[in-house]
Length: 162
Image (cartoon, rainbow, N blue to C red):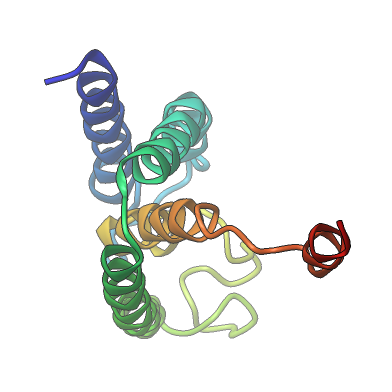
């Protein structure tokens, strides 16, 4: 295995570990009370560079390894379908959490009343396995799309004139 692949796998693992920790350790459960603020923000700040590196390396790996139009088209279709499925799962996950919290931040009976959408109870809306895979699939799709070369119509006209 190449050194670049190992580095990519390590960054993928560490960034997933960050997402897992934010979702499971630094998000307060709806039935618990928190008065300490959002400690998850510290973890988010610490893991953001690793996550960005992981996405960039995913993009580079896909861009450098995919050959042939048929392979690109197949991966692009599967990635798009997977992204749509993940969007539905994220929306469902968010809706379930909002119900458990008693409503959105503007509902007086809600546990997150006046907190806003980013708080210690809602970290898991943004940092979970669904969003992790969704963002990495977007990196795959951007990597694929960046390999498609478009002919500049002006260049082909100039070539024909010569």
